[in-house]
Length: 201
Image (cartoon, rainbow, N blue to C red; front, side, top):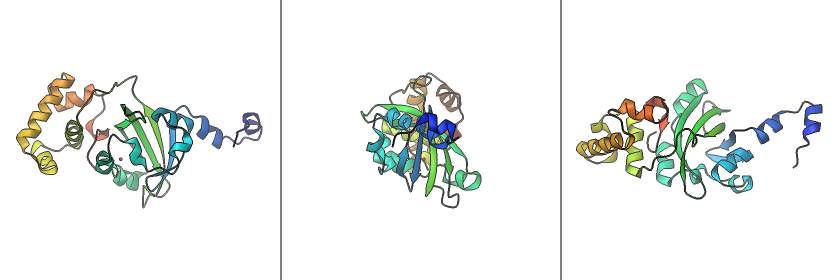
């Protein structure tokens, strides 16, 4: 339905205008299904709005495994404060990966993902995506959770020495000396708000 902008201003009906034309991606979800989104959200991912309605959010992640691994991140915080944000790698329709800043608000705090609204901001201009393997993204995400190499090894069923090898590769790739520097190089945020792949959106 076409929005008559002049009529909306005259009648002070701004809610739909704000949703439709916000310069940031907005999406309303129900049980991880996209119920509606604005043009900025659809365009960010390379879709038309109609293509995304009634789709499971998994289609916007680098892989189904990564969606499963991070889909519940933020549930605890939403339940406690009804505010959540992180920065994560998402996938466009053409398969290219990019960093996004995600913020959420639940309409059902006791069951936070039952009904919620989210904003998505494309961070490509300030944080170009550096190609990472799926395993590197998994390890980066667990490092952001504060896990040790041994704890990550248990989660991934690999040796802690293998985790250390991947960690060293990540440090070299980003040209830093420690995990704190790694997160700083990714935008100066702390690990609590970095979701690169695995880990309990």
